[in-house]
Amino acid sequence: MSRLPYMLGLLACVVLAAPPAVAPKSVAIVFEGDNGGEVAPCG
Amino acid sequence: MDGWKSPALLVLDSGNALFANAGVATDADRKRATFVFTVMEELGTRAMAVGQRDLSSGTAFLEQLAKGKKIKLLSANLQRDGKRIFDASTIIEVNGVKVAFVGLTTPGPVAPNEPKVMAQPTVAAAKEALAALGPRDVTVVIAATSYADAMQLSTELGASVDFIIQSGEFRGTQPPQRLDEKSSVLLASAQKGQALAKLDVTLGNGKGAFVDLSVIDRDRQQVTFVAEQIKTLEDRLKLAKDKAATKSADSSAGGLDQLKETLAGMKKRKADLDAQVSKKIAPGSKTFGFGWTLLGSDVVDEPKMKARVLEIDPAYSGSH
Image (cartoon, rainbow over all chains, first blue to last red; front, side, top):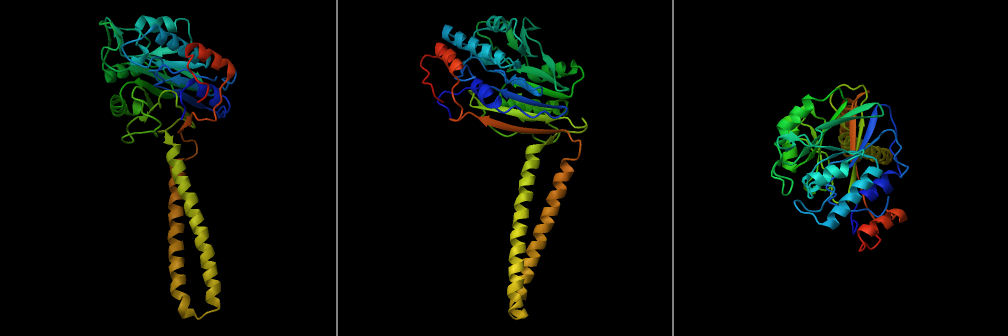
């Protein structure tokens, strides 16, 4: 696990690299919580 | 950040995003909070529940932060002088799916030095907000509350809510929870950005209850395992028959019968599992899948963002 943990880096680096497939009437809800003021090194 | 163009993607934050501690904030904390919120907006975050650790610098700071932004701050139960401060809910349509979100804040005096600001009990506020919602396909409560409170919401709101997303207790990456089939599905939110949750919802024909694909996946893994066992047994049986052909029938009959019996049992088990899987996921079923993406060493720094981070956190060493 990271030394400094970040949600924003994940959003930007991981999910963007593999956007979800688009099926009819479907939605991918991606979320984070309890970030607690952490900042991201990538994005 | 051009990747946020998928028409089926909806980015959300379940709250407690902005401050490390509740009830107190320094200028440096406010700078970090502003940066986090700014990047959340850049990433396309559509809604966020107001958590206690989003109010560490007070309600006015948060209201000012959100002014003119696209992120919708939600809390059905946070009040000032008896009046709601933020919207209780919002409905966002993505790829033909209308998703309703109701936000909740952990009950009590959650804003420092603001005695007139109080988060009211969650269940009553949630029910009122749900009753006021318009037509929607999926209903989600974002509960920036304790896990126990979220569990209570899950049982008391029941089928009126499809999913409850909780933040506030650093619960880590756990699978979906529900006490019984009548309860809403309860999802946690990991912590400190160490993981990102993805909830894949497919409406199908829109009828019936949601089928949890992670349960189906486990059943399918069982089917695969049993199928492999059957293949092994069939190979052993063939070998045993070949050997039996060269020996007296009496010396090998017992072993052959035992193998045949075990094989028959495994085939019945596979047939039962096949039926179970097909029953659970009938054509047109409403389904959901849920998983985590963990931040590991494979996630590399992005130079422009890293430079912005170093302005906020000069001590950052530059690696995960």
